[in-house]
Structure formats: C-alpha cells, structure tokens
Length: 407
Image (tube, rainbow, N blue to C red; front, side, top):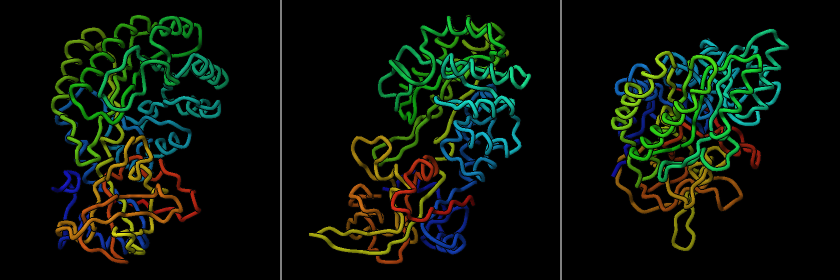
C-alpha cells in the first residue's frame, strides 16, 4: 500500500518527480548526493487547502524552525500571514523576505540580550517567555528610544492526553505559568511596553482531531480568562497549532475539516464577541512543509550479513535524524522510503537502509520492502520537508553538508 505522502509526488516513467522534474535529471542538476528537494507546488497547495477550510479571520503563521531554508521562507512569505522565529538568524532570514516586521513574532526560551535588541530594532512582536525577558525587552526599547511590542506566552495549567508532543502544562521552561500571568501582566504595565496580547503553543505533531480540538478549546478559554488582565485592548491571540503529519504507515492523517470547523466555531462564538479587534493566529510549521520534501541519497555499497541485506548510502542520520528515530520516537519506525527511479515496482525482498556513520543508530529504514537495488541506485526518504537538516547532527564525522533545493 502506497503511503499517502508518496502519492502526492508525481511520476515520470515510473520514477519519482519533484516539481515536475525526473529524479535522475534533478540529481544531475543538483550535482551530488545526498540532497533535500522541496516541491514549491506542494507547499502552495497545502496553504490553499488551509485557506479553503479555515475562517478568513484566522492568520496563518509559519514556524520558521520547521524549515529555515531561505528559498522556502521566501516562497512562503507570499502565502502566509506571518512568521514565527526562534533565533536571531531566523529573524534575519525572515526580514530578508521583505515581509512586514509587524507580521513577525519571536518566541522561544533563552533569547540573548543581543537577540532582544535585534528584535526591538526590527520592530517585531516579542513573545516574552518570562518576566525577566520582558524587562530586558523594555530596557532595549529604552536604549533605542522606542516602545517595544510584546505578547506574554502562557504555560497552561492543563494537559490533554493523545494530543501529540506536549510543550505546556505542569512545570515547563516555556512561558509563564497561567496562575502567575495576572500578576506578571500587572507588573509589565509599569514597564515601557506595548502589551499586544497572549500566546499559547502547547502541543506539536498532533494527529488526533478530537484531542487537538479539545486543546484549542481549552486554550481559547484560558486565553480569554487571562485577557481580562491585559491592560490595553487585546490585539493579538495566538491560540496554538501543532498540526501533525503522518510519518508512519500506521498514522492516519489529521482530520483538517473537523479541526477547522471547531476553530471557526471558537472564532465566531467565543473570541470575536469578546475581542473583535484581536488578530487570531494559528502557528504551523511541519504541517505546511513537512510532506513537501524528500531526502535523496545514493547507494554506495550492498552487503549480506547473516541472512539480511544492507544497503549503505552516502547520507544518513547526520542529515535526516528524524528518520533514524532520533527526534523523540520511543520505538524506531520507518518513514516512507522508496527506490527513487522505480517507485511503483513490486518489492523483491526486504532490505535495511543504513547511512555512512560509525554508529548502529544510523538506520534510515529497517527491513524495507524494496525492489532489487544495487550500488548507484537512488533512495528517496519522504516526510523530509520539516526538521531535517537543521535538526540533525550535521557535523558528526565531518561529512559534507547536503545541498537543499526548492523546485
């Protein structure tokens, strides 16, 4: 059975095509393997799908951390309503697209004073993760003679089971505990700050629509309760996001229509009656780009070991750590993986695809049903559009960096 993400990509003479280009020709164009290829058409269509089901009042903000490749960010600048950055380097990349600084937010713990000054000078909205950070933003504003804009990140007082990876609830280094928010907001009023509103982002890689809807509803309830303590009219409410994608054969895609319907109901019945001027933000990263990328690597050796076939490739976990199970999987499972030039050919026997690193962890696919493969053949690993190269230990063993291309 073909994984739904594999079906998103085109075919040319039985081979994978990315952006309408045959994978062999694309490999020649890139000049070497391994490489990441991102399909701009698939990215655009994902945004179009969201626009078709979400209420028009909801702003889509792209979490740059998911894939900070400059060409990808530039493409998205004309499609989304804003960027969320998590470092000074991401901020510079976002500003380079020409997007309005007022459409950029800067979230994440541990921002340096240099980064805070950088953001103040740019005129973005700071997502304050702590009272100390907000005070540092205010001080940077005083030094520059401006009144910086901030929104306070809230660490909720709840968790929802089966709602994906948790970034909120309980003790957290993200945000201000919900019970402390009123007092912190009161103290922030004494600082030279423009307090725009509140921010919650507490789940990631959510695939269960029912659980995600519960998270969003509880987020909105909490935000509206705390918004009473915001001294100025609330202009900004980030209600969360964290939509997931199906990495494994057992995963079911998120029911987007159900989630979008619940968001529309929250906007119409809950948020707008209380805060008609608020910009309602939905923050998404992997959902926008994750399924739009492939990692292409070449077989450099084939060997048998005690009855098992190993295909050794010139890439590996140092480029695509998530595929090796190194980004939070309790048990390693295979991402969709194919012979790039024989995508739909029946499998001959299972083979294990391993990388070039000196560690048994460097496994891209274990006992994968593939056609007969040999040295020189191309392997494509899907779900490579988000948290790929920049989320991997690229310096390990000092192998060359792979090329990234948007087609």
